[in-house]
Length: 193
Image (cartoon, rainbow, N blue to C red; front, side, top):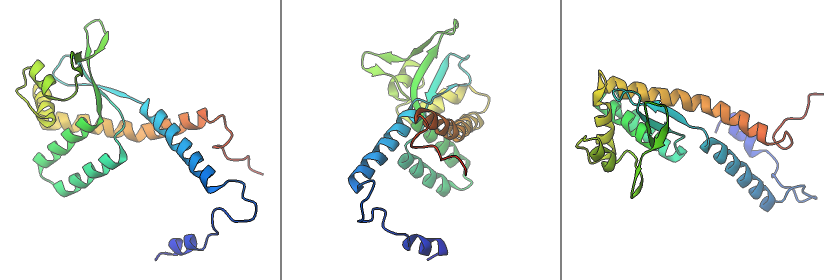
């Protein structure tokens, strides 16, 4: 056990019996409110990336990946080591998990979320069929989408890297938005004395 762990075990109970200001039930409610508000703000952050080889008209609208799903993906990536094919599959999976909408951007700049009679079209067989990609899985669709790039492996890797950079900076933006929406009461620190 580390010194920090030992220190943490010596902390007093979070809700002492002598006239608590917040009950355990109230604390759970407060924590739920904080988590839900952060999730809401994070969910509003998006990144639109043009798929190379489609003349700027095919855009993937991307957003955050659930932490549990991201952990699974990272665990698989660690197991991939230096195998380029594994790396390409990892990057394709990252793109699949982060993509929230497939968007058509007309030459006039007007954007339209791609949909058919069955609802929004994602990185699925409907998109593959519609674009003539001969792909039945989401991963095959991603590979097909990027076949128009100069080098598919590099293009997919660069695309995934752009999302990673966005996700890292989005955390800071979410923090700023979260504090801004809190009206400065519960989440801001008291002024230094």
